Image (cartoon, rainbow, N blue to C red; front, side, top):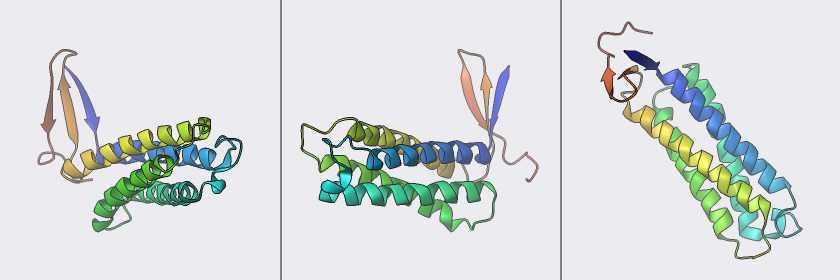
Length: 157
């Protein structure tokens, strides 16, 4: 039987990578001229919401990396999920406030960034719901998988 050991550091680092990539796409979307030939700063609400979401994504990425190093208290884990959700809502508001037909690739980059942010938020929710520190072992063949939680028998980290 094949088995995959998925501990919380792997989930945190994958979430951090997705959030960092989402932040990079947001930064590119903010700095390019694909908003109808001008920058996003000419679109009042979209500019503010994009910049706030970028700053939140930077903070989330930093918190995820520090959490992987296990130097923050447990309450930050819940704040992390809330910040990630708020960042994705700000991105949704940023491109939702644009009703121009001339908006091109920069808005598409922001939509892609929101997808990666939502994916990272789902991974963070999976991590929070997984027992906060328990290892998850997935066993089975390619046609029959079952998840088993061995946190009680696993040695402390």
